[in-house]
Length: 429
Image (tube, rainbow, N blue to C red; front, side, top):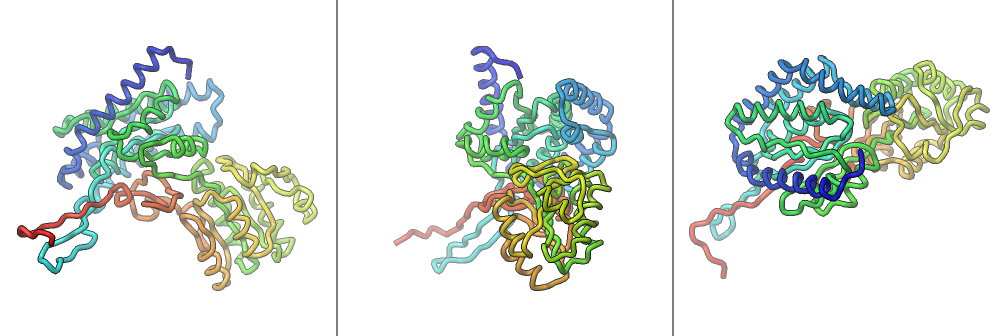
């Protein structure tokens, strides 16, 4: 991103605010759109995306070429890259969302007051939903689908690294909307020429109702701390897997390798493996060697792990315990049983997903009760923290905060509520 002149900066801000104002204007259209119309739009969009696969791939290739020319890491290229299969998957996500229950209008609770007033609490759209995200163009379509089904307008600020892909996708989605008699402004892409456009979005109080960041820890922190618009924090995934003394070792190894290598660039990838000190040294070495055989570089206390018989260990620094690798790297520590694992997780976790392998019911329950993260896996891979796996359809992100939404966020999490009271002329004494 180059330096902008004052005139360019002013024009960018005006563009963001104009699009936010347009989104606010059309929000009532989506808020009252019947479910059948939402589903027709989503299903049509899925079909058109597949029909336009070659156009989308051509735009995506422009982004990939530019990224590699600028030294983009291959793990990020993997997040950015589309192919026919991934586009089919993106379209499938829209079809899945179309098949889900519409949350808008759902009555959560109700009663009749003593004076005869009928009272109910119903789900309503949030309104204008701002999204700030990095690299992954599939998020553009996921956000559109979930926003439409939950009655929200999507205001998208993607990364400059996916600029051409996002522009093509939004162009297609806007045309589908127009073809169905809806305003193009129900989904809009904000400028990405400078980081300042993010600040313009997250401070547009009165125009934007909620902002959701999805990406690196740096991006999420910048949005959450800088926003004057309400923000939902989606967290980075420093996910841990603890192998207990009572684990079935081969199964535990399979789960760790699946969590680490299935797709290392996603937030539910396993980033740290914790080994119970009570495991036999040979079992500890089996875990490390299985990871290395799968192409994973192991970071840990070099002297202590090599003292057990491990080889090719990279000495861990503090960042190894704190950060997402998003690569074929994993941190490894030996801990003093489940208590040690819980304490390590409490110190270093980002609150996303933690997992345990054990056949001891007491240990499993203790881990489930005391680990404070959005998702806890008992004898299952961390890779299962995913909206689609949870039966929610395409998710908007994984929330690691504790207010409003936590864990995979789908349709219900993109709504608020309001109270409707119906009387017959009652007045309050």
